[in-house]
Image (cartoon, rainbow, N blue to C red):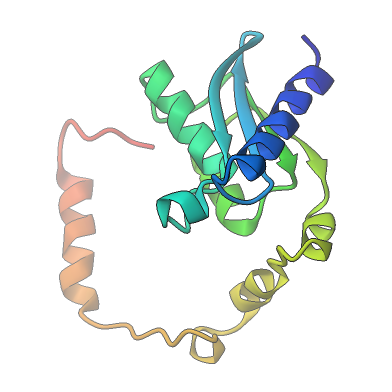
Length: 156
């Protein structure tokens, strides 16, 4: 199968999820060694989970199926260019590459505009729309110090 074939499967999942009431018009698959190992369609509204974007669902499915938390050797296919949250999840999962269909500007025209998130990230913390308060740094940092000193930890 080709990149186009796998991307068409992601697009099919987007359409199917939309028509079955799972969520918005987004789909994704994860492929390893020419086989689909993870599938996902947007399930935000059907699961009341704002993180249930197609790419995140597909990553979770692939990791479950492969028994790993990293997707080296995999390609993630998405019906649309990943949003900032999904892009972060993709980078943490570490696939070899991403192939996508529509641009995020196409999604914006359909009412899925994530430009405000890109803008929020660039702002100083004190100017962001959702107020952020930092407290107990020493206590929280102590956990990181324990992590650094612990033996047998799994790095990721």
